[in-house]
Length: 440
Ligand SMILES: Cc1cc2nc3c(=O)[nH]c(=O)nc-3n(C[C@H](O)[C@H](O)[C@H](O)COP(=O)(O)OP(=O)(O)OC[C@H]3O[C@@H](n4cnc5c(N)ncnc54)[C@H](O)[C@@H]3O)c2cc1C
Image (cartoon, rainbow, N blue to C red; front, top):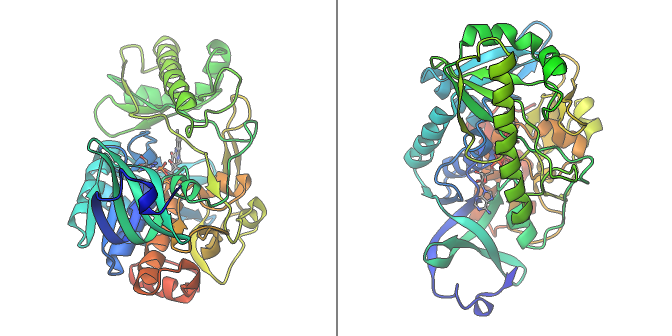
C-alpha cells in the first residue's frame, strides 16, 4: 500500500484515467460490475491486465457457464436475469452458446470462448460511460486518510494512477483488497481448489468422442494411471472437429495447488499445466475413440485458477448456508450450483443442492470487514468459506455478484463513497430495473 501521493514519486504527476467507479478485472465479475455501474449512471473505468476481457471464461477457455440454472426437478429455470442472462442470450443468438445441457443433477450452458471475447469487447465499448483499459495490471494502491484514492497501474510508460470515488475489486485474487490492507484468507494447500489447464483438440471425430465420454473414466482407469485426473469432459464448440478438453489438475511438486499471487508458483503452474495438457492429449489420441487423427491445437491462454485470496467481509457466506438455501434481508444475488471440489487426489466431488433450492448471497459478503470505506469486492474473491466458495465461484453467480457490486458502487459514488452506507433495498430496486431476478 502506498500512503499518499507524496510518498510515491513515480505516481504523483501521472494520471491515466479517473472515474466515479473503478472496476479492477474484466472477468465475469468485472463485466457485471462495469455494466451494472454504468447502467446505474456512473462514469466507469474498467482495468484488465490481459489484452482481452472475460477472465477464466476466455483466458482459461473453461467451455461452459455453470450456475445459470435452478434445477426444479421438472426442468431448469434461469435464476439470475440481468447480465448473466444477457451474456448467455447473446452467445446463443450468435450461434455460439447452447443450454440448458443436462449435466449430472443440474445443467450447464456451452459456449465458444472466442465469441465470448468479442462479446465482452462489444458490451464494454458500446455501453455509455465505460472506459476500458486493457494491458493494465493494477500493482499498487494509493490510500489517503484511510480512503482509497487511486489504483496504480503498471504500464509500458511506468506506473500510472487511476483515480476513483469507489473501487470494485474483481481481480479474482483480491489484489486491490490485499494492497489496501483488507484482511484476506487463502485456503490451506490441502483444502484449496486445484488449478487446471484447459486445451483445445481439433480434427476430432466429435460424435465418436462424445459417444465415448461416458466411458472416459473407465479408459483412464485402464490406461491412464499417470494422468492428473481420473475423469474429464469434452466440450464441443460447435465448430467442425473441435472440442475443449477439461482433463488436467495442476499441482506443484509438493502436491499443493499453485498460489498464483507468487510469480514463482504461477510460473511453475503454467509450465506444469502445459505438460499435463500434452500428456492428456497423447492419452486421448492413443485410447479414446474419435481422437486418433486429432491434434492439440493450443492450451488456454492462461492457467485456470479456481481459488486464491478472498476477503474477510461483514458476512462470511458458509457451506451450510449454501446447502440450506439461506435467505438474507440484504440479498443481492443468488446461487444454485452444487458445491464442486477439485481438492481430493484426482477426483472431482459434487455436493448437489436439493431440487428447487437456491441460496441468497448477502451484500455484506461483498463489503470488507476492515479497510477503505470505498472498496467493494465481487466474484470468486468475495467473503465465503471454502465450502460456499465451492458453489458460488462459478461464472453465472460471479456475473450477478459483479452486477450487484457495480450498482452498489454507483449508488455509493453519488454520495460520499461509503459502500457500507448504501441501502440494500436501493441496490435491489436498481438491479431489478436492470433486469436482475431477486427474491422478494
Ligand atoms: C479450469 C477451470 C474450469 C472452470 N470451469 C468452469 C465452468 O465450466 N463453468 C463455470 O461457470 N465456471 C467454471 N470455473 C470457475 C470460473 O471460471 C471462475 O470462478 C470465474 O471465472 C470467476 O470469475 P471472476 O470474475 O471472479 O474471476 P476471473 O475469471 O479469474 O477474472 C478475473 C479477471 O481479473 C483480471 N485481473 C486479475 N488481477 C488483476 C490485476 N491486478 N489488475 C488488472 N486485472 C486483473 C484477470 O486477468 C481476469 O480477467 C472454472 C475455473 C477453472 C479455473
